[in-house]
Amino acid sequence: MQWTLVVPLKPLAEAKSRLSDTAGDGLRPGLALAFAQDTVAAALECPAVRDVVVVTNDALAARELTSLGAGIVPDRPRGGLNAALAHAAATVGSARHAASVAALNADLPALRPAELARVLDTAAAFPRAFLADAAGVGTTLLAASRGRELRPFFGPGSRARHRASGAVELCLDAVHSVRQDVDTGNDLRAALALGVGPRTAAVAARLLMSEQ
Ligand SMILES: Nc1nc2c(ncn2[C@@H]2O[C@H](COP(=O)(O)OP(=O)(O)OP(=O)(O)O)[C@@H](O)[C@H]2O)c(=O)[nH]1
Ligand SMILES: C=C(OP(=O)(O)O)C(=O)O
Image (cartoon, rainbow, N blue to C red; front, top):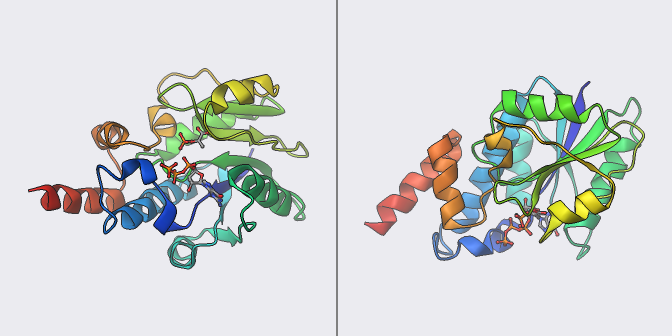
């Protein structure tokens, strides 16, 4: 089965506020963009992915991610993350020959295409399914098979909320790169240990230099 991925991305100037002690205002927007670029590039290399659509109102991010091959859906004003995802999923789901739709966070800089394929292939057996994040409290991916509504409940504690909504939790080993979102300095260190994509590696190197 081939999937359309919907990737939400806040305006870069507002993104990754929990990384403010690790990356100052000068580097943080570039770090958030690098995470999104490495996430989208890896997703586009995944054999289970037909296309990637980023829902964002950030003009620079839209330009850079389009150049990688992503489509863009403009965000809803002030609707928040779940409204943005539901809107984008409905937009791509109503297109002719729509694929199944999955929401994937934009902060997975270590994402490996083969691991993402394993997650999506497993999700295809269920109407709605999700993958918990590395911390075990959030969600990095929520999938809805063709014709099913996504019904996203992302945000703090989303693992429990997705489970309560009836989505099936995917219990898979060896898909660390799909679980490793980066919200904090410790998450960034964990992602770097897994091996990040080239854009995140470049910004992380500048971060280390600026610390010296
Ligand atoms: N399009 C869109 N994306 C959002 C919105 N809110 C959050 N996101 C994205 O959803 C994912 C998870 O978001 P959060 O953890 O809330 O925000 P973050 O920027 O990653 O980190 P913090 O600022 O530290 O909370 C990231 O990919 C965000 O860019 C929104 O209102 N619209
Ligand atoms: C929005 C989520 O991610 P984060 O951990 O980035 O807050 C979530 O886990 O539902």
